[in-house]
Length: 251
Image (cartoon, rainbow, N blue to C red):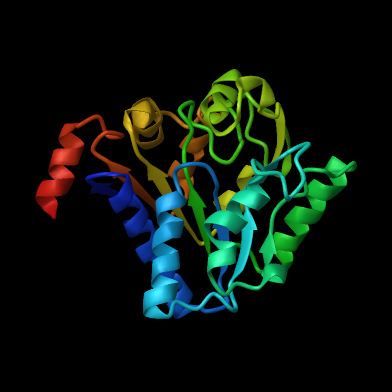
């Protein structure tokens, strides 16, 4: 893995946006795997700035989001479809038909999941997957468990994830208890993976990602087997460690 150490969350977003924008310029019809939550917001803000000020063109870009809450329709303020429209899609010239997010209101979850995998496959696969990482090492909503799940699937959210996401809802009781999430296969088959980790709450997860054994108890650990992973972490997520000092001194 390549580790890029930055000072703070803003710098992490700018660095991730730099990598994504380079791909878009090199391959205008690229296919991006996108994430939601707090981690990618600064990335999306910087991509919007690049669109407005530098002419970054999204008109041929295709996107596939990692996940969606089950039970929330696309216009619910806490759905990930709403999140993506608010934080990126409505601010750039991407075509709506080129954006894909799992249907959280589907009555046929299994069929929806298999169809989503087929769409990614038919698109030629993901050129780049943007990820955050949960405090328990989850990526997407692939939670700690006894095995890695390859396909897009329904997952019951852990209490740790529910608590972490409760800040986006009026109360913890309002947080959905299940979601549709991309499986590890489509993530691992992406040409490149860019993972953002910021803040002290991510120290243990980042350490397990970089140094731990590969285990479904830490889903992100599987990324150690991917040939092209860039981890963008701030000093806080690296624990103010000697690794952070070495990375800064190397710059």
